[in-house]
Every structure is written in structure tokens, then in C-alpha cells.
Length: 173
Image 1: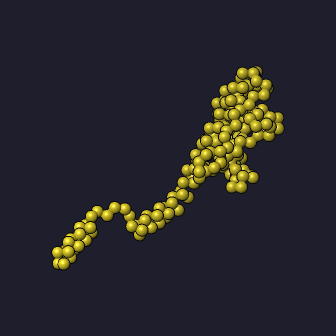
Image 2 (image 1 turned 120 degrees about the vertical axis):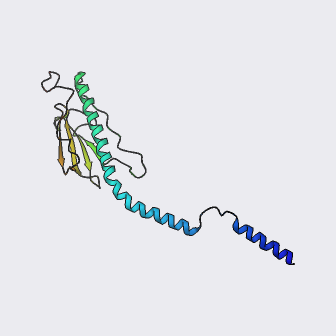
């Protein structure tokens, strides 16, 4: 009997010294709570970075559209068109772009008497019915301007960029 008790104590002692693997429930609660606190602190800090990326993407598409339109004019197309950028991003937490590409004619139409040959990337509001600010480029002259409450860090946008078509070119309509 004494030997049996002694063996049980030895087995219990050895079992307690075996490396425990995994986390306890308390440790998991602490980790999940810490991640939650860090997320609530950092997500608002990422919003300006996402806004900057959206503006850079909109500028890229807008400049590309103007170049497509100008190449169409240089190639003698009477009604040049540009490729409309995709509206869906495909990321889980950002489903659609904040910028909409507006014109008063058909989608992708470069020259429109009603819009004055201006292509616009409008920063949509939260409910997507109004724009906060617009980035505009005149297809013919290359003049850039902004309308609305433009953030101060978009400082390079005003003025004229170097267009493919010179101002007094006979190819211009």
C-alpha cells in the first residue's frame, strides 16, 4: 500500500513538471483585450493615410485619363474617350473608392460642351450624394484647379502641368 501511494505521488510530481503548452483562458482574454485596445487607438490614426492614398490614386487615374484624351486628339479622333477607373477596390474594410469621376456627357467622353472639356475627380461625402472637394483638369489646356474644401496637404494641384498638346496647336478643336 505504501509503495502504491509512493508511486502515485511520484507520477503526480512528474506530471506537474511536464511542460504545459498553450494558453490559459485568462491569458487569452488579456491578449484579445489588448488587441482591441490597440485597434481602437490605431484605426483613427490610419484614416489620414487612407485619405492620402485615395487622393494619390484619384490623381493617377485623372492624369491618365487626360493623357488618353490628349492622345486621342493628337491621333485625330473626333470624339476621344478615356478608360473609366474601377469604382470597386475589392478590400474588405474599404469597399468603394471615395472619389467619383464625373462628367456631364457619356462615361469616358473627353470633350463635352456642357463640362467645358474638364475631367473631374470628386471626393464624395459619407452618403455619396455630394462632393467635399473636386480635382479638375481641362483636357485641352491642361489647367488644373480645385473646388471645395481641399485639404492643405494637396498643395501641388493648383496651376498648369505640361500637357501633351501645346496651347496653339492646330489639332485642337
